[in-house]
Image (cartoon, rainbow, N blue to C red; front, side, top):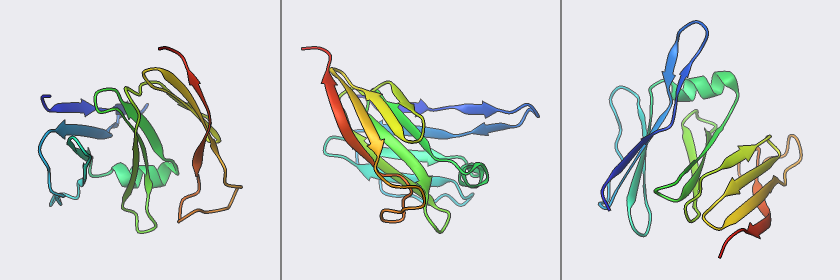
Length: 150
């Protein structure tokens, strides 16, 4: 499998400020964790088959903190769902899980739906408002899975 690079989004606000968000690279080789001198956040993860490197723009974590939000996205080629948030020290927190060809993702903050190759998954946040689990304010647990193909 060749290396893959995915740029998730570029936000354009009414005042014409562009904020590049995330790029994800995958390759067959192991990539050690890197620190960028210009404060880019790079996080390397090694799965059983390939290495993934998540890179954000310099101001991405500041923007997340200012907007008081987290980001969730899926990757079809890598078969991953990612949940991005902030650690108490302001560094990027990345949580990922593998689902075969995950693609669609929808959430209202309490419920999250995700599609994979043959399944539709419903996850529910099991934490009450103000409750934390290991420092996180959301804990999505699978509540239902529907098989949609053979």
